[in-house]
Amino acid sequence: MRYLFKALGSIVLCLSFGLSSAQQVPMYSQYIMNGFLINPSLTGRDGATTVNLTVREQWLGVKGGPSTYAASFQTALQDDYVFGKSRSGHRKKSRPSKSGRVGIGGYLFNDNNGIVRRTGFQTDYAYNIPMGRNLKGSRDQLSFGLALTGYQFVIRTDELKNSYDDDPYLNSYDRSVFITDFNFGTSYVTSKYFIGFSMTNLLRGSLVFGNSADNKIAELGHYFLTGGFNIPIDRDWSIKPSAFIKSSDMLLNSVQLDLTGRVFYREDYWAGVSYRTNDAVILMVGLKYDKFYFGYAFDLTLTDMRNNSLGTMELTLAYKFGGNSGRYRWMNSF
Image (cartoon, rainbow, N blue to C red; front, side):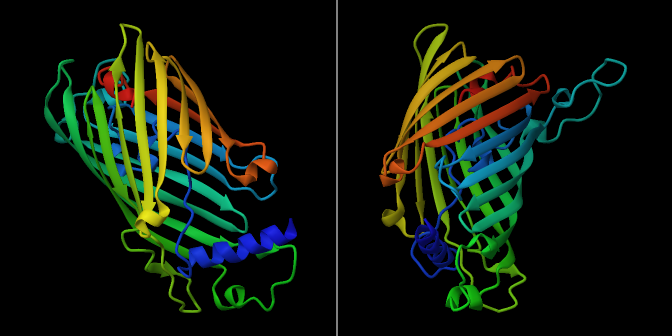
């Protein structure tokens, strides 16, 4: 295994500093439950205030396997019922902001991949434009979002099994830098379908702090395209197929596709399966109880890593409050 980690360490260094043609980014199997992690335009989209926790442990059983932890908050700056009532029990008489068109949010994350750790934050701003009423009496919505992200990039040499004093990459690059950048996203959501597009690292990691070696550091831009449909079966049951296409500046050389199908019962219980090209088959279940949401996904690895790994686990917990979530219930299912 030490040879594997030595090889992974060198590869990750090349990826991180633009010396190769690809780069790994955090991956989420349940991206639909907390979409603004990959698309800032989805911030506050359902009118509720949401606190969300996501834990992902990849390649269970493999020491040093990738892991991601994220804690997020998002809300819509609109009618006062988002934050509740006044102490007297009456609604506050405050003026709505942009008729509820603004969403704000942010999250903290810790992403580990072998000897590389990224710990940072992201703040999101979304602006929603109503596009006319649909058959359910709610408005279709076109949204745009911008996010500021900042993270500390650390190479943990203490995790290495052997001495790397003669390694040119470890000796010529700073082992800890702070990178800031921007992400952009747009989406269109109706009661029948949704589509979204986002891109990361607009500055390509050019704004770096702590780069004492004055080395050129470049981050690849990543592109995400999402879409899906809501297909009602009867009053209680519905099917929601969706797709998630991921790529980077390398375009076709880095395209990956997630195809997902989920079955819902009264929007309170769901189960589904997803196929990620050249990677895994994903089984997922979830439920809603009062204002709490729970989702669990297990990735069955299809690559050679399955010989050493038990699979990948992802757990998502969410709490939604503010009396507005029911008003946009048709949007919660995407």
